[in-house]
Amino acid sequence: MRKTQRVPPLVLGLFAIGGGLALLYLAVRILHVPSSSIQKWTDLDDERSVASWFSSMQFLIPALLLTPVLLDAFRRREPYRWALLALALLFVVLSADEAIEFHEWVGYESDILLPHDDRNLTVFHTTGVWMFVVGIPFLVVAGVLLRQAHAAFRRVPGVMTRLVVGGAIWLSGALGLESLSNFIGPDDVWLNITEVFFEETLEMFGVTVMVWSMYQLLVGLGFRWELGRAGARDAVLEVDAAPAEVGGEVEAAIDTAAR
Image (cartoon, rainbow, N blue to C red; front, side):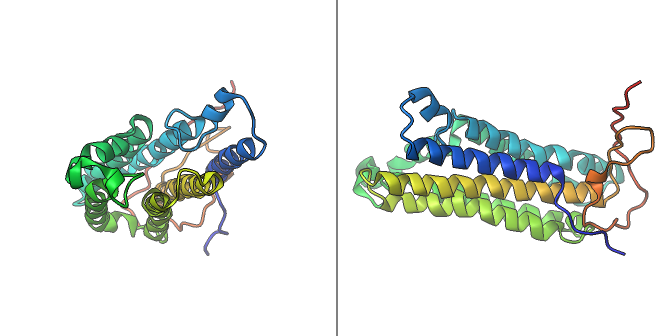
């Protein structure tokens, strides 16, 4: 019998934080809060803001959740082990990008591909062409890795679907809405604010769904945390993934019992 579908507290918490940061950004601008510091720290479009740090942290979570599965795959010498390693590293790279603005740097450097090296003479006057220089190769690499790792994800029903849906939500903001920003004039203040709000919210929520997928994979394969008394299983692990058929259950136990 399948367990009742629930959203894990970890995922609920990430949704709440992401949504809260997005609403705070909107509220500060609607209320015209005069503090430049508050404006900066709540700016969803500023890589030095709290939201940027949160997004960077979020990308590390699926990499961490994937690590026990990855190590077990290497122990078993599974054919998909290298694809899992590459996916984990890809999440780490995306986390770093949130902090160091790599894709923005590529956007400026790739202006040499444009007429007269000037993005202002093209329709991509805001973003440049980074979505083509980085975005298309990224989609190809991600697609290949997902295909190679499919055998690992199909061991737990729903994981692959949730991972792809999360990636699609994230990309709709990171590539889709950001591309639309080229068609918004600098004087359209509220249109720019609205675009940033939806773009960054989609990105944060998309990553949260990907976190959920890796959590579901970890739990569905039999990895579990134990909290409280030895042998007591935390209810957070009651998710919708039926235990997969594996060669033996592997436990990742964290015992926080007070002595």
